[in-house]
Image (cartoon, rainbow, N blue to C red; front, side):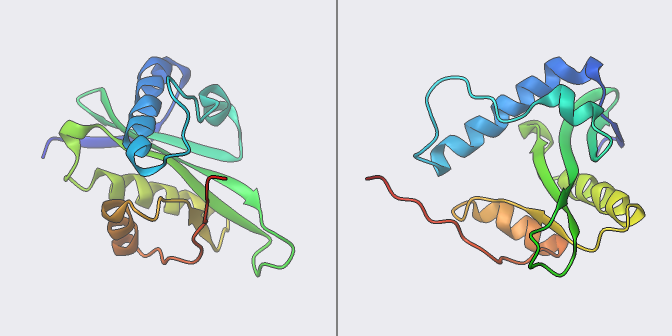
Length: 153
């Protein structure tokens, strides 16, 4: 595998990150019949980059962006054990670089930042029919807790 480095995202990465966002949408479209048609926007990427409570990182290979992910500090519900938790999102690896455990490098870096911020819990959302992602997250140490149910009426 080529040399992979992790660094914080910056506004110069915006064009590529917008492409990554559409890669996430394309990957999720077959999994979610409730997604709208056309170009969708999930993230306010400049906000992800500039917010002090968000650690937004990219993986690079020879200065080319190949993956992304962020961890956002969130307040937990009043009935949860931990008052704050880290929410992980925008995990994306370019197709040509998949299978090289780059997502693990991203997750490890996000986890390290969470520990420095004294967080005790990480959360993320994944489609229940995305078995490859679920297996990857379970190998990393996540467990399934909640499944959202939807129906058309």
